Length: 295
Image 1: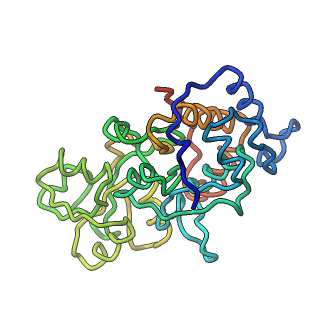
Image 2: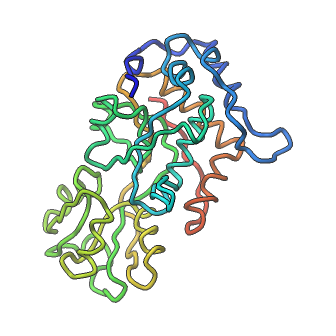
C-alpha cells in the first residue's frame, strides 16, 4: 500500500487551486440529468504536491467505513459496502478522477478511526463519524454532510423504557469509542454501560435479555429496525446532535477545504440527494443537508 506522506503537507489552499476545485465539482449535467458522471480529473488539475494530486496520480483511494450498519455502511452480497457513507465517499473519489473500482474499502470501527487516519492506513474515514472538539485534536474533519441524533432501541414489546431518563438501573449496549457510549458514561451514570466493538454486536444481547436497550444515532438504529421487522423499535426523541464528518489527516487544511467544496457542490447539483435516495432514503425522509463547518 502506498504511503500517505503528503497528507502531512500543511500549505494553504491558493485562490487558483480553489477555482480549479470548484470547476471540478460542477460535474452534474446541464440539463438536470444524472448528477453522477464518469470521473475525469487527473493530477494536473490539482496543486502540485497536494493530497488531491497524489491521489489522482495514484488513481486509487483507501476509505475507512463501517461494514455492519444498514443504510450507511453495510457489506453487500458481493463483499462491497453499500450505504449513504459509501456514496459520499464515491462522490469524493469521483472528483479526484477515481472510479468506484479503484476505491479500497477498509472496515473501520468506532475505536480505530483516529488511529487508522494517523497511521496512514486510510486516506479518509466516512463512517458515521461525529465531529467533536476532542477528535479535532487528533484528526481533521470536512463537513458535516449529515446530522444525526442519539436515541434508544428496545425490544418491540418493551413498554418500560421511553427515553434516556428511564435507563437508570438498566444495562445499555453501545460501542466503545463512540460518542453515544461516552454520553451514557458522562450524563447517565446510573445506567450500566455494556460496551461492544460494533453496533451489530448489540443485537443478540438485546434479543436474549442480556441488555435492556441499545443506544446510538437514530439513523443507525433505524437501519436495524428496518432490517429486523417486528423485533425492535425506537423510543423517545433524539437527545443529542451528532454532525457526521469526513475524517482526514490532522493539519491537511488544503485537502479539508477541497472536500468541503466537493460536498457543497454535491448539495447544489443533486448528487447528495441522489445518494440519500438510493440508500437511507429507502427508510428515512430526506433531510436538508447541513452547512459545512470551515473551522
